[in-house]
Image 1 (cartoon, one colour):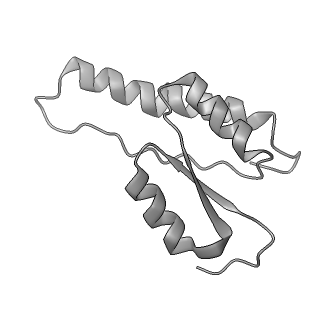
Image 2: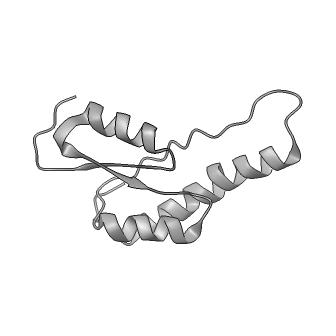
Length: 101
């Protein structure tokens, strides 16, 4: 993937290895940050460090599968996928330009 050098893609995730691999694949125009979408303070700290945002893409990969999934696993998925995405969108909203998404 090639970038024109005018933007930086920030890869934010809990998993250090996944962040590094994704940033390495994108090259010099990528940066990485730790974020845990289940922790409101982590989300806010991440966005404070990143600064202005043009676009936000949430793709948290936590999804328990199977018929023997515990209630706790479902709660965790709900926390990450619904509340975590809402936290990220709220934190990004104050940093998005009018034409951002």
